[in-house]
Amino acid sequence: MNLRILRTLPREKAFYFFTSIGNYTGESATSLKEFTDKINEVNVKSLEFHFYRGDFEKWIAEVLEDKDLAEYVQKLQKLSLAGDRLRIQLYTTVSRRYNHLISQLSTRLT
Amino acid sequence: MKLKNNTVALDSTDLRILNSLQENARQTYTAVGKSLGIAHSTVYDRIKRMERHGIIKEYTAVIDAEKAGAKNIIAIMTIFTDPKQSDKVAEKLCEAPQMLEVYTSLSEELLIIAKVVAENQESLHEFIASSVAPLPGVLRIRTSMITKKFKETRFSIANNPKQLIFIKEKSNK
Image 1 (cartoon, rainbow over the protein chains, first blue to last red):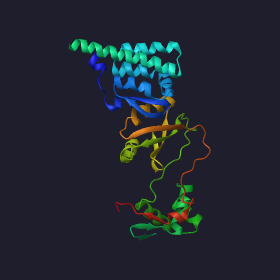
Image 2: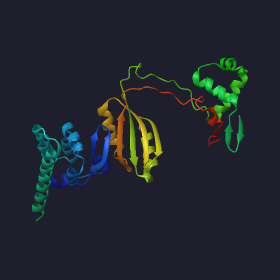
Image 3: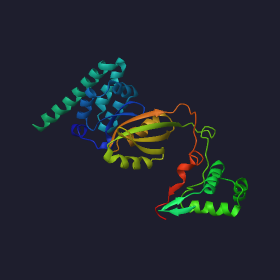
Image 4: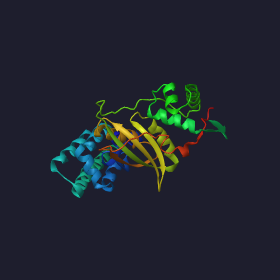
């Protein structure tokens, strides 16, 4: 299951970062690793736009198929975060999950 | 109307007929002839020749979507593209029924400008996110939703008849 979550997706399944309706930043992510990195790179307006529309948890649940991470991200909405605080919290949550999946995978392989 | 170097030369009678048809394409040949002071057989011949040469492309109805009850939104998209893939992106966009008009433009960067229709903001976003952004060669997109229309006219022969004296003949002729 972890391997499936960590896979690289085809282009049409990627997450495309927008700053508002129809305004695409040119940034996209085709894996959980790339998604984690992009959280630190994209315009914070893009994070705010997608976060409060529920786009992140939808993509994580339906495309990456990681229900647990989708739930963690969804729970962050209660904190009413914005700007860099949102970026930091989102990055912490997603990168923690990524590192957890990688360490589980390494343990299984050794 | 004469053929010159693979182009169709329109004379003033042709231009007057086209202008009259653009005002009202449902007129009879007799009505057009009467309003222009020429025989209806001349009008018929000229129209048929212009249809054959693709100068008159089609006769269509112009619909006021608002009055027809359609509550769609219209947006103008500016799509910044990799110059090598711009034509392919434009061709792919043309396949989507949501696209009303698609143009390429050479400014500082190569752009595609497209007019798009959608049921609402959400379906517009869904279309752009799932069908436009993933196209290879799309670098970024700016979208402006139209909130109020001040003018909309179809290009008329009367706008600048001097520039329309020579029109390229259709390549399959």
